[in-house]
Length: 291
Ligand code: ATR
Image 1 (cartoon, rainbow, N blue to C red):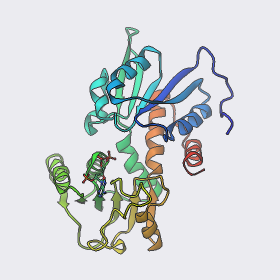
Image 2 (spheres, protein in one colour; image 1 turned 120 degrees about the horizontal axis):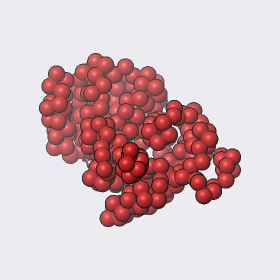
Image 3 (cartoon, rainbow, N blue to C red; image 1 turned 90 degrees about the horizontal axis):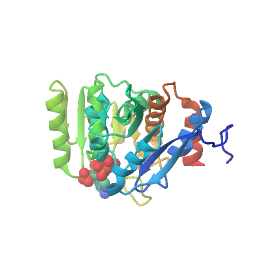
């Protein structure tokens, strides 16, 4: 595919990057470079495989070389909390950093500022891609790992009234439920499958990533007919066994591509101070991930 940029790289080109380990399957460069080109910025977005033991030096190096910012993906999001000069409220609230902006202070000194754009992206995608009304909703969440925990806390912060958390390791679901009780005492939160219908079933486990994976849902305990809408955070493959079954049963269903899009769009807005060209970024992302 041809480069989307009208301007060639020159001495004033500035850089952004995603740091991950591994990083080679990241779709962020395709998405962000399309967005950067549409905004007419003389920037480029790169990807670097950085071992966690080198993350501090890599972030410092990017700062010293005048990078605009970096994104962090697995396994760096928690580590980075300790590596920035200041944390935005979003990073403090969710306890993880997926976006760093390098900004010059009034003294001319460059400071690194850590943000979290993942949490907002979850609920934005649920609303925009699946038309879910979260206020007062009843939700079944599968998974209580890193992604599941943030999803649970964000859903409740956005008004979900009743939340059921299911996880292979039940103690992790119990810990997430307890954290919600502490932060939001009015919300009804339980560990295990619910009775009756739910407005949303959300998969935040990694089950479905590999072709041999079973569905993340135990249909002996909860039937897909009880779910009005199903969202799977996985976007590669486009249709996990869970999403396939949901669609076959006539359920509203969406995969996690929107989450990736909206977290990236927000990062570009933080760096550029301008509205992100979301439609352009979505097209580039879909082309990159699904061909
Ligand atoms: P992430 O940051 O993507 O959330 P994670 O913290 O490792 O990654 O969480 C992975 C999630 O997928 C967890 O909910 C995990 O369940 P456990 O907490 O019991 O490990 C879930 N998961 C992974 N493999 C699974 C499997 N084979 N069966 C059921 N759940 C699985």
